[in-house]
Image 1 (cartoon, rainbow, N blue to C red):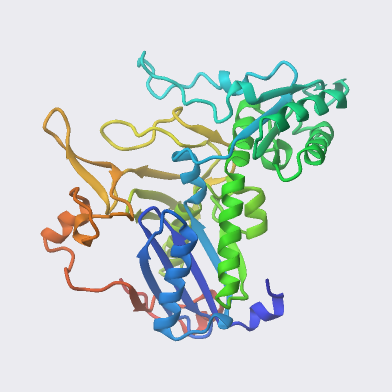
Image 2: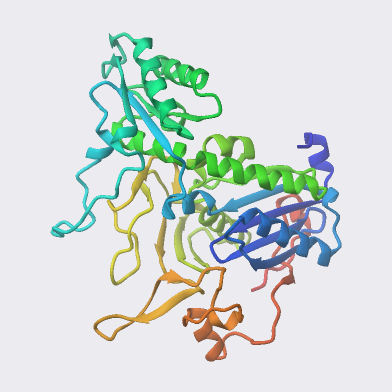
Length: 428
């Protein structure tokens, strides 16, 4: 990492967004406000390879040296995909005695009220990896049962025998007083070195036990994979000569450091889509528009966000890993794992450029939610894809050029905030 003085002296900023189909990069010249963009296929096996591929293409074609970049802001779907694809860490759960089944019981919300065949999503932590410790706080934070550290050591020993990668700790009412929970987490870190420990008081310190537990479990389950990914990105960037400040987009539209993201990856679940809404707000501000709808069509999904008075709608009622609703491709509420972190509110459907067209049992043409992804991609990419996609249709209809290259584009989309005195006219 570099110090603040070096960051301020650097001329360029980079933004990198990794989606399921494409990896995009944007280079901003802080002096002139000019922007350059590049797009390359995502590398699903290791997204950090695609990260460096698109940076290498952009920097080479534009003629900028890595040392001239002061800040890199990264948006990615790695956290979300870890849950959706089931690539989560082997996780254990520790809670107050009597609440072992909180993840099994979950909640009574159902995506379809009269669907007798509906099955709740399986807990991310199975019951045999859920453990109880003796302690209890009242709803006002008074100690009803003191923490029994012997029960914590007993649980830690049992967890160690299960060879887990992560542990989520969620004690009753720890959002009022986290003393017990912090002590439990400290003991687990001592007994289980190298295991990622997530405490609910650090992740979602608010009432409603299941939602707090679910958020903490999601954080723990994706933490090892996200931490390894961010570490690979950082090491590859340093090896390529970058000495920039590395930041990650949060679901709520802000940014955090790579180190923070590695500890609290649940806050970057919707990092990519949030970046699109933030960009829309900036563009609308330059055009003098306060109320605007953002539309972000990607390779797999299309997302719409509402901005009112220059402010996006932010919600804490969000789920990850939900099931698509038949007919419209939206996500059914109650079919996924709830997380209680700030998220820019979006409406999402499974219809992007790589979404596959198919005919259902009623001979009705449908689009998505399955996508050709980055490998092999739509058939028109000539990389082995055989299923018809939205991009294939647009090519056949003449909406896409079969010869134009979009690997690197030069564009002027106004100026950066630090160079608004030299504002250019935005263009589409």
